[in-house]
Image (cartoon, rainbow over all chains, first blue to last red; front, side, top):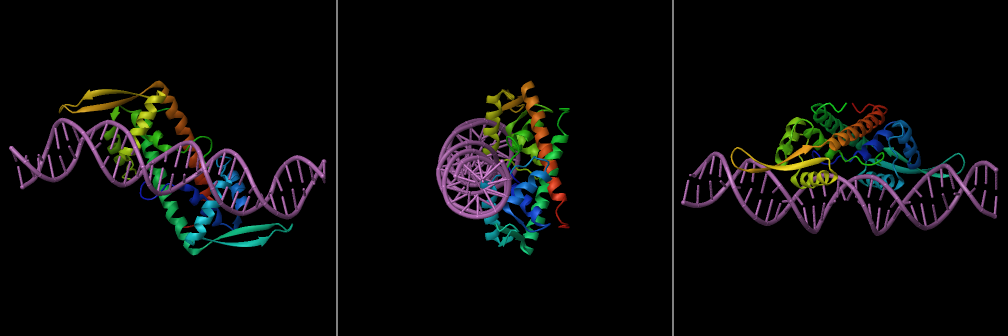
Length: 111
Length: 111
DNA sequence: ATAATATACATCGAATTTCGAGGTATGTCA
DNA sequence: TGACATACCTCGAAATTCGATGTATATTAT
């Protein structure tokens, strides 16, 4: 049904992660898993296209950096525009979440 | 990324509505809109296929009833099996919601 | 009386989102 | 040297929702 645009919460999660620090893809998957207590297991086939989309929109900026061991990593940085997007999507999530809970709380006690 | 099965919360909303009383399709759309403070605007093209699916699964049972004005309506009743499904999906939603909030709360203050 | 609107059901193709499977390459460890 | 983890990527398939469209009946306005 989705309110206006989308309940595409995956991008929201990525933006939230990047608001703390620059990160690379593989790292995001791991962070999401720990921070969500193993509820989220985002797949690479989901994440990479999202990152590319956010980059195209100007919400993130990518740069290559070498890890201490010599491996090449692609870090993503949240732009000012991305911060705005995060704010918007966060509010959308809160409205969505509030609405689901409102419907649920009027449901009869399934424990 | 979805935890195990699905974040298909639409069925959850329908099941929650039916836990209170039997309802017909058109009524559900209206109830969802008011109970969610206009956040949800479920479309008929979304709802009817879901109802048919839930019926095939045995979560709801349909019956025809004539409205006081003579119009024919198709009411849906939540079965015992449907109550079990509601319970399961409710728990899934709670885990999902908790996880999103956990990631968000560790994000930097976007107001 | 008639036209417009609201109610009420339904289906179908298109768009969006996510996954699963597969591919490439490099670093580490047995 | 082979196995495994890290790290990036793409593509087709599956799932979900919407928009459009169709049918039919009741209500309201003209």
